[in-house]
Amino acid sequence: MEEHNLILTDIMKTGHHYFYGNYIRYASIENQNFDIVDDYYKLPTNLSKYQRKIALICTIFTGYMDNPEFVTDMNRRLEKLKSLGFKFILVSPWESRANVQANNIIKTYKFKCYTDWYCEHDWFWFYMYERHLQKKDYFHIDHTKKKYDFLYLNKLPREHRRRLFLKIKDTTDLLDNSLYSFIGEKTPIRLPREYEAPWVEGGIYNLENINGQDQNIFEKPYNDSKYSLITESNVNNNETFITEKIWKAIIMQHIFVIYGNYKTLEILRQQGFKTFNDVFDEGYDNEPDADVRMWKLVELCKKLKSTDYKKLYEQTKEIREHNFNHFFNKNNIIRNCSNTVNIWLDLYDQI
Image 1: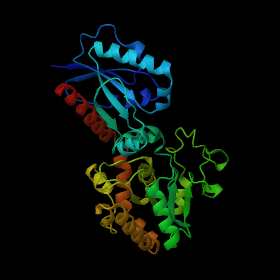
Image 2: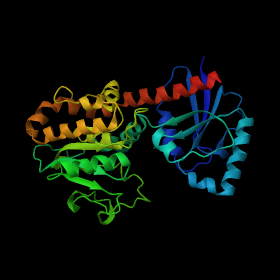
Image 3: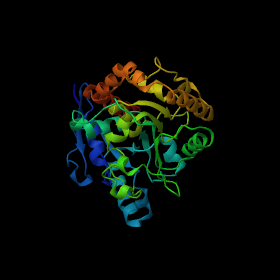
Image 4: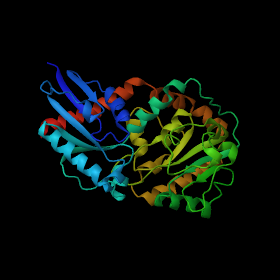
């Protein structure tokens, strides 16, 4: 028997309801029907047909919580929805759980959520899939001629990024022939102008207004460099947070190494991607200590720097093409979104 579910994608409609709605629409769960509403004022007047009523609470724009009018309106809506039988999910899929907690993004609300939702491995996969699906056959990907060793991009100056950057600069020559940046430092380090994305005005990121810039792809830096040295948003062992940084390398069919969460590569393989462990040593991924993992990663980069990249690209051709095709396989997006929404439904029923 088919069950009906009503999901309000953001009770305050603070701007991300559109993405949340698109994500949920990919969910395909047997005997489950979903009505998705993006505006509190568009909720059906008759709710009797719904077995479950869920409202998402977006925590992105926490600055609004300093506005008494916003808080009053939010709490009024929460009380009304609660009286109508809604249950709440706190959502922040754009950030990792660790970064949300570290930055005190979640404040004290006058309601109880039955679960929360963070990025993990699939949010940015979904987002980059939607953003680049129509472009995938038009990307200019050419790995035949390389001028530089590494493409090493850093924006926000998180502590683990600083440690890796200083270790590389102070103890190695890895960056002597590489493209690298560190935008968020007091004295920003930028790419040469020809490698800066054309949509970045004057070659300068405005860190207060970067909507979508991070998720766009400029092919030239990937075509002219041998390897992506990716520094993810955090390196803790309690979650796996995969952002656009990794997906951009996969879309560009670039060989990559990752300084991120413990066993990030293992999670990619569990999701059906292939990594390069049969071609070079990816043992750094199995190292639980973040500093030791960093050291092992640097040692691997030293070896890659002296490796014949043409031979390596020939050896990894099947891996890179597989990852590209796997990334753009819609069935994988449906699977991931269905798994997430199914967790919501199961938890809802347990309360």
